[in-house]
Every structure is written in structure tokens, then in C-alpha cells.
Length: 354
Image (cartoon, rainbow, N blue to C red):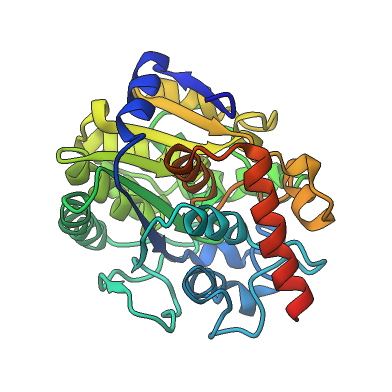
């Protein structure tokens, strides 16, 4: 427990951790896409506009194979900082936690077996609606079906995501639903002005207070899909939303369509909860009476600059890293220093084998 920090409903957070300690975990990785990420300067998830679309499927492949098939190397920043998938993979493998991939709007399909939802990718919210209302409805319905099925197989369903540019659509959704959100970014100098500009132009198009219509105008496909998963899964099992800002937006929308708060927690890294340019924990508290569990994976002590960078504000979270690490530590009893040792081993394997 000493590696975790609890926020929001702390009592429930303790009970949640206690109830999942001896249980089975299942990690579901939802990949998606919003063309909003193609606005120059908005994200670090890929070196350029064309390569960004390969990030979600490549993350999925890396989790499965330890290497990628759709691109040559694992997703990383132009200067060699690896995808947060490295943190997730280390966590899942060290605890033998099974995982599967769900395609809920990724532009490119991964080269591995995955659950296909027929959900299409989201459009660029700075210039047009992300989706139609019926696409949102489809995403929610399919999310509900898959959420219930997966939750029935496990004691704790952990849901992670990969959607480049997703913090911007998340910001738009939170603001549209009435929350004064300030969100994190994959880069230390959070491009706040650019995000706010995009969000402002998107919010001007909202003409209905109906939650589905709001998501259709300014959201992305991952949000209604994962909210659908949460709404059904939380009625049969514990659910941990693994992520930061994007999962806060999922929670905000889920609070409109209904979910079981007693079985729900958000799991993230301390790099999100400590981010002073964002207000993650207070937003979660405002949305729902659930715990936010934060883990410090100790990357500030890493001998590798690429891992240390996470503690200095790069990426911070993604690919469900925080939730995966929390689950892994709960299942194995590993400390942060043991986890770091394993993450460094994986980093070493990736960068000495290339």
C-alpha cells in the first residue's frame, strides 16, 4: 500500500484494493482514433501526422508480441522516449495478467486477434462533429455488450486505452458536461492554448444538452465505448478505469448513462495526480463518489533517461499504465523498486536488441 496514494472516496479506495487483492485480473486495451490529433503540435504520440495513426495498433502489438508488426519499432517520441506501453507490458507480464485488445475506432487494425466493434474513428473536433448521434449510440451499446462479457470472466476488469490527441477531446467533453477541467498532456510543456482554442471552436457547435449529442459533437469514439463497458461491467465485477484525463471524461459521460459507483475506481500514475497544469483528482471527485488510486512507479530512480523522462513530465500515463501497475503490485506484492528493476530490464531488451 505504501506505493499508492488514494484520492476522492478514500474508504472505498481501501475496500476496493482489499477486494481485488486475491482476485483475478483481466486487462482490456481499447484502441481508438480522433483526427483531432492531426492538428500540428497537439500530441507527442508519434513523430508526424502520418505515423500517429499507427500508434494505437502498434501499442497493441507490442503488448502481445514484445515488438510491432504494423511499424518497425515500438511507438516512441522522436528523441527515443518509449511508449507507456513499456510500463504496461512490464506490469502485466510480471503478474501474469491476461489481456486482450478491442478496436473501438482505430484507423488501422492491429495485426493480432482482437475484438472488433465496427465503431468508426472520430473526426477533427476543431472543424466538424466527431461522430453522429447514432454512432455514439452504437459505441455505447457495443461497449455494454463487451463490458458485461469481459467482467463475467474476472474479479477486476482493468480498462486501458490508446487514442492520440485524446486529452483534447476529453477536455472538450468535460467542459461541455459542465466541469471546469484542466487536463494533462503527453509533453512537459502542455500546449494548453492550442487545446483551449480547439475546444472553444468545438463547444460553439453544441446545440443540445443531450449527453449523446454532446459526445457526438466534441468527443471521440473511445469515450462512449468505454463508458458503455463501465456501465455494464460495474454491475457484475470490480472495474478499474486505467488512465488519467481521458478516463475522467469517460467517467463524466458514464455518470449520465449510469454505472455502479461502488465497484468502480480510477487507477493512474502519480505523474497525472501530481501534474500542476491539470486538476485531475478534483475533477474526478466532482464527477462521482469513487476513489482515484495513484501509483508512483519510481521511474525518477531509473538509470535510463528514457524511463526517467516519465517522472519529468513526458507521457505521464497511457496504454493503461497506472492501472496495470496497481493491479500488478496488488497481485504480486512487488514494491516500486522491484517493478522498476523489471521495467529497466524490458527497456534494456528493447534498446539493445534494436
